[in-house]
Length: 153
Image (cartoon, rainbow, N blue to C red; front, top):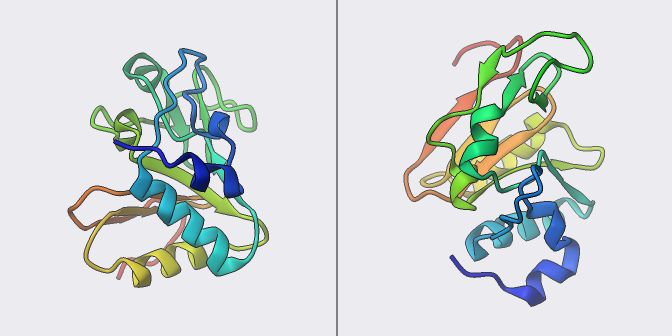
């Protein structure tokens, strides 16, 4: 895993990639950074890193995901109060520093997903959620749709 400081300073702050538990884990893969930079340049709008990029193993084990509202939390969803609709994957690519959950200002998650899928048709993990897209730079092609209501292909 390598970090290109020059690229990271262009559009992103190093702390955007840090594990949100405060443990200090904030590595970022240069290939992932290139994908995020490409998103920023393609849409010409700011890219925000939702839920941070990295997670240490302990933080990942505490994560619950409210799929309905797109929030990550340790106890209850701040919007609907649900507890643990879905746990974060035990094999989460976020623990390897090769995944991110970006949003693009004023661009729907569906449009971001479609762009990433068309740009990288044979590789990467790309997941669609109601309010964000997951991207990881694994070599294998994997796709999923976790929106609350959607039509299956």
